[in-house]
Length: 400
Image 1 (cartoon, rainbow, N blue to C red):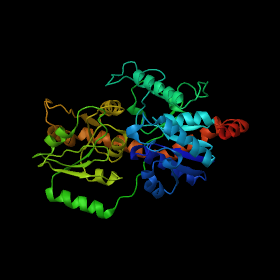
Image 2 (image 1 turned 60 degrees about the vertical axis):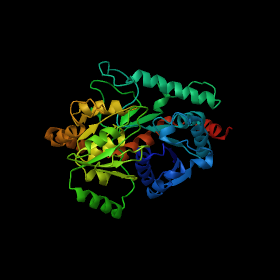
Image 3 (image 1 turned 180 degrees about the horizontal axis):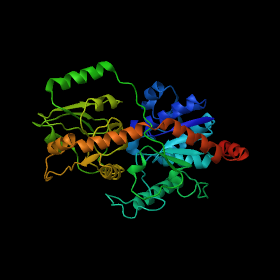
Image 4 (image 1 turned 90 degrees about the vertical axis):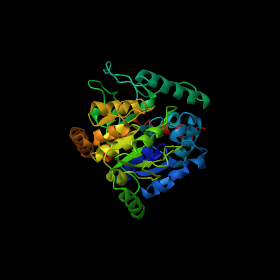
């Protein structure tokens, strides 16, 4: 089977797709990856074939920061690349409306790799779920509107879809978290399957890690790994970071890959890094401070680290609420009026044996799952059950 991976090219989306792709290649399938040119080195390290989206007119089309604005470019790039690869199935990321529309246009099965928690409406249940920020209903409605907008701007007429329920789920959607991160009693849509964290990241450079370790050893303070997500127009977390790590009990390693405007104070114990890997840095840390995005939350839990979460938008409030329910995180408010200073919140999280024990237990359950194998099983099953008739497939892939 010829499979084209079309994930967003940011590490938090790209790496899980590569984890699944490596297992599918091991099973004998032909795997290629479509993404922006910056993803090339990671794809090469994963041992998979790479097709730069720019070669197919997809400049910027697979950027997580611009996912809502580049749907048409993503659609056209995926359409051209899938035809060039003679793809039998597509694998993409949640939020990739352009690739979903390309799969529909080509009558190809498509598997969506989701986040650590489900974003959209539940099938049943969940009525009592507290809503932080936007509701599931609102998020689902906006997702459908964005999909319809990409269809209209791409010049595709409305038609009946083969997908049951929502096109946002594709033929199958893979959740990288665990069932306990969903609201108690809620039932997921039929297409949604828990497969676990899908862990892969580029190998770290030992010399770079040694340099970081020597820098941290000079202070001797316990380390907090900080991974910031986008703030979606909300307040910056940097004033909070400077308060927490200036003349406090901790020092911080801050990954600035998603922080467009780092503002460390002149006396703050903060080391800025920009690395394509985070696992070895979390291994150096005690607690982890994050915005509530999937990649650092899952990486921290797999290493048994307690979390302090300060969410802004997108899935951040939803995943933060899930971690608070599971008892593996504390909430860190970015408000200056917060009654407990941020350093005290981090210290309490680090000293909370129950919090750490629950994080370790959930991490062990996540690690016990062969998530790449489960994801590959779903992809193969989807190909068997969702592929169009051969004559329809030939017509779809040859039409202009």
